[in-house]
Image 1 (cartoon, protein in one colour):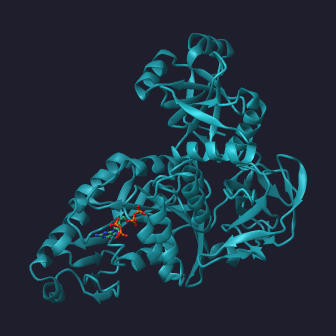
Image 2: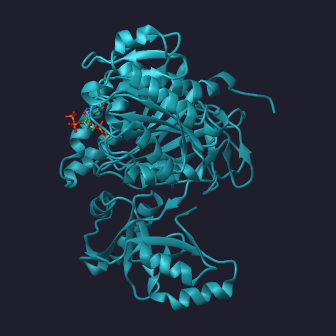
Image 3: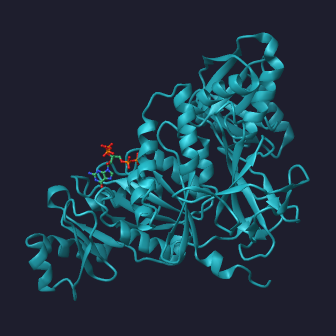
Length: 525
Ligand code: G4P
């Protein structure tokens, strides 16, 4: 096939950041944007953070959702690279969206707090990256503070995340004794001066015996020599193939707040991270270099302002070229629609987009006609794979205050589940409707939207559930037997898929051991 868009594709990078709250994602994002010349946004990212900590009543949800539209995708230019940074909401607004964003990226940056090592949310996000073998570059942050021994951090990553680590830089001391990092590849020293705001001094040295090392590092020079000797004996060497397969992660050390080590990280990122890659559909792989246009929706953001009921569908372009006003085919509905007023998310502002390329994300305004996972192409009826639902971890029983609004409730819940705002389950036993979410803010948004958009007053009741798995079995008889024996735990989701709901992972394990032929899935297309 003739290559198309070659240089536009090759200069694009599309990534997300995976981290646990407070590891430094927001700070790092700001510094990356600074290098991209999108300085104006620095305040906006901070504003979002300040907002995040506010209580989530109706107004603040609205504000939060409003603000997060502008920071959902941050596009910036660095050298000749067009970079799309897709936000992975992490604090109160951690939700299924956070997972789903990772289905739309080509690679990820993992930020780890040097004092904490691998934390829970990072582990969960890593599981999602695993599903598509997403390549990951690691940044160990906050070296200006006392933290864990760097070797222990690497061990922790290898053990908890099952990925081989390859340090490309190495810290010299930490906290008050933090002197900078030694670049293992080009054998240079990058010296740290607190509060210098990242005017990285790069000092080239011949080798580790260079007396310059003693001059700058004094007694810490020998410590560095010992560390490097250890690394050279014990640590794997970088193999780009393994990085691209997601089995090996290059590691950098630094301090985001001091803008130290960030430029080095960005340089490595644009060199190593993949340009848009081919994506799987149910019928074939789609190359980003194909001339025909295609892409999919991975996130829908509703406008919480009752005066503006529009939604923005976040659409990742996979092949071809987007031009304003183009007509596209919506695979699910079979309709041809015009992409008229699409938005591109520049870090500095939102702008109407005239053209966009694979790896870019555009925002499509709609009034509820687009579902998560929808594929749009210029003609071929394709459907991209890998945009699943993720098993919820929080559950509520929803109760109508006015039983006469049953129909509106049904309608609202169908729509909200199609937008990925919440998942809906009907228990086989009884009439209860159970809502499931990855993050609890999703429940608040759901109640608020049911009221504002469907006139439905509803409340939640606690349910003793914390685990959901989609279940399947090739043997229908066995499957029916399983469903019958576990009737009180079986529910049907909004796509008519059979789901097993239970109180704890312990209960799940117990059940899995009893029913070895049944498959239990944590995600489901
Ligand atoms: P997040 O988005 O991952 O949740 O983390 P965020 O960047 O908001 O950083 C969390 C806290 O860690 C912030 O402090 C931030 O300033 C601090 N931080 C980030 N990078 C570094 C670093 O390299 N060294 C040190 N010592 N601290 C760092 P805060 O007090 O919560 O907020 P702020 O008042 O400083 O904004």
